[in-house]
Amino acid sequence: MEVVAEGLAFPEGPVVMADGSVIVVELAGGRITRCWNGRSEVICAIGGGPNGAAIGPDGALWVCNNGGLDLAKFQNARGPGCEGRIERVDLSTGRFERVYDACEGVPIEAPNDLVFDADGRLWFTDLGKSHDGIRTASGLFTCLPDGTSIDAIFRHAMGYNGIGLSPDDAAVYCADTHQARLWQFERKVQPQRPTWVATAPGPVGFDSLAVTAAGNVCVATLFDGGITTITPAGQTAKRAFDDPYTTNIAFGGADMQDAYITLSQRGALVKVRWDEPGLKLHFNG
Image (cartoon, rainbow, N blue to C red):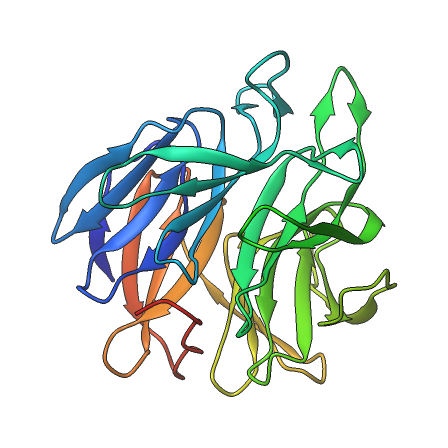
């Protein structure tokens, strides 16, 4: 295992760039950071709680911002400036802008992870928020990156976190943190109910995910840290990592078998070799 960067403030959302660098969000630091060869540099101080990131069809970095978290109390920050939102970051300047913070007049609570389909449409999960013993709803949403259209696909989840697309772009996968379940939707802009794919054994939770070229879903697994690989048929296997907050995985390298994994409690981004190639993301160079 190679340590790419450490000393990060709860890193998540790794984005593997064409030049070999990896961009991560620092959830506890409110920053977007580029990492390479043991070094790191801040692209921008975006504020709030940046959670997931992806390169869009415009070449910009798109970010799910949950508005901010109090990690000591495991609850969301509240008040002005703590709104959940979808943001766009210009990587050449570090400038960022808010594109969406509501859907059909209802505020977005805590956007968590996102993926772009081949048509350039953005799909994202909303984990929901926890504060003062109250938990708000979670769900799956989709929007256009020009800011003109946003739709709710499903608003009644427990805690949707990771998201990804099948190799043929037909299915949208969502990992539920609290249930440790993987769910599947059709990639259609219409209200839907999900289809259950698998549940992880043991007292674990699910975080972000990445899909392999063969269509297997690799889900970062919390508490008993590791990566759980789920086949489309629902079979599961786990690779352990020594961090209870193993939160994200992303694929890169010439053969797409370099797996970049965030060990968030440790504050590290690491690279390991994977046993199968990952699926190349749309618009990711």
